[in-house]
Image (cartoon, rainbow, N blue to C red; front, side, top):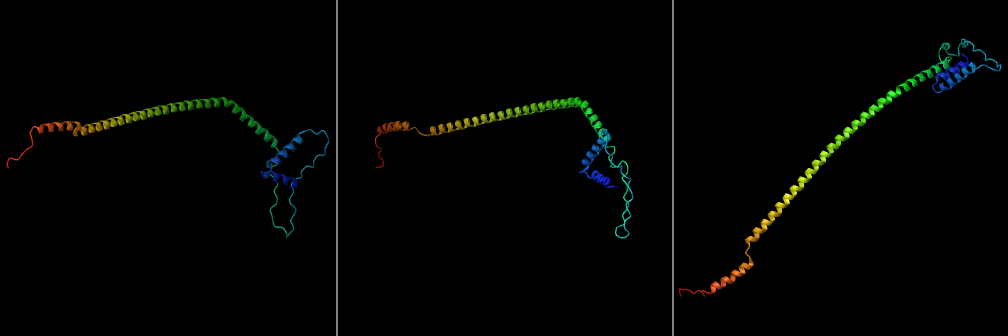
Length: 198
């Protein structure tokens, strides 16, 4: 394996340097396909891989012989045709997507319409429930007011009756004063009582 092949293999096997190696291969392929206007010397043809030189007898370990790169490997001979095929596949996928877009847009519109209708229905249902709760709360508040008014009325009536009963049980000082003068006039007609024993 010559150093150029070794370098290409190393570049193609490393995922970081793979894009650089692909661009280099494309550039070389385009350069080969372009008709040359000037006569340039052709690069020497790559030599067939040869067996490695025989290692010295005692200083090197016994390693297996380097195998040649199999055909169709990472050499990148059909790279431009592969890239063209990939571009054709991408174009077909884009055309299929454009053809499917109106159908997908209609499906999305129908879905949005149904979701909107469901949201409105749920909103109306929630509004009905809130209205019913508000009516119940207002009814409870009204009954609380009525009950409190009845309790206040009964309290005032009871206090009034208690005051009336208390006032009715007490003698009137004016009546007592008038009665005292009448009692004094009545007693005056009888004179002073005297003992009949003596």
